[in-house]
Image (cartoon, rainbow, N blue to C red; front, side, top):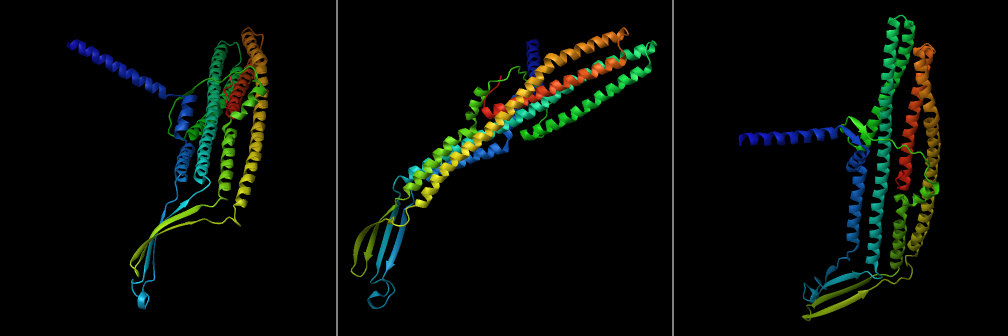
Amino acid sequence: MHRVMCILVIAIFSLFTSGLNGQSKRDTILTIEMAVNKTIEHNPELKVLKKNIAANKAVKLQSGLMPNPEFGLEAENIFGNNDFSGFRGSEITASISQNILLAGKISKLEKIADADISLSEWDYEAKRLEIITNIRKSFINALGVQKLIEKNKGLINISNEFVDNLKKRVRKGKISPAEVSRAQIVLSLLQIEINKLESEYDTSIFEMKTLINNPSLSFEFLKGELKDISSLPDYDSLRSKLKNNPVLKRYSKVYEKQKAVINYEESKSIPNLTVSVGFRKLNEVNANTFLVGASIPLPIFNRNQGTIQEAKIRLEQKKIEYINIKNKLTLRFNLYFNKLKMLLTAAEKLKSESLPISEEAFKIINEGNLVGRFTILDVLDAQRTLFEIQNRYMRILKDINTTIVEIEGLTVTNIE
């Protein structure tokens, strides 16, 4: 029995330890999905906009309330002389009056409040999309630099092996030590490039942590792959999806609100009715009476015509504003689409022509050097050319991915 208990304890401890190790392993990486989720969770602008939605809901609650009734108390014919001294001839009136909003003003105010709630929700979605786009761009930029560092470190390992082989040949008296010095100069230049990339990576990570709003966020490396898109998406199909952008979609509610404002302002041309009921005590004759009253303003001069006209002009203004914003988004889309087209052309040329040629040239020259067909200088030149082309391709691939993110942010569409 004791032995069985020991085995169970060990098994449970092993599971617990593996769970901790798994958690620790997860903490060492950051994926683009994790970065997006953390950004949305910690972003202060989104928290402010959520409060704005809640505030507008409170405004709607208030807009649906009737005006409070008014209580009035009036005393006449008091503290006079002769028969009206003190309260002997007084008339005391207590009344309650209620302002009644006509022409459905309360329901019209509620429609305006409803539109404000929807607008604040669209503002939240627009800001959320903007924040997601920014953090995705930042992540991809950092990921691209990380992959450049990994690639260049691999190339440095190759260069180190090359230098070691040269040193062996020097010891055997086959080549001059000057050849090793040349190779070491190239290696030093590569190391300088690595240092620059590491500095660029640190800057990218700082920017990303700033966007996440969590400077203490800790991870060892970024996990993900850059999309390798070979064909350009269909322009017309992609452009048609600009209408999905929340900045544009919110205008349906902008128009709805402005029309509700027009209806409300037109309803104000019909004045409100005030009714009152009261009780009056006549002390002089020791009698009680009741009174009923109603009043309504006469809309002779002010029929709210100026405000109604303003509300209609504002609606036309919003329509022009929509066209202006749509044109700006279309311009941005065209710029990014043309940039993507240019980058894809450059990437394809590098991938299908420059990279294979430079890799093959380096392989031939490196192997030929071993049998004396090419000089060390030829090998170093071919190696440097290969490094530059590989780095250029990686940077173009990174730019392709950030441009795709921009287009996806404008069209709210996932490009595969």
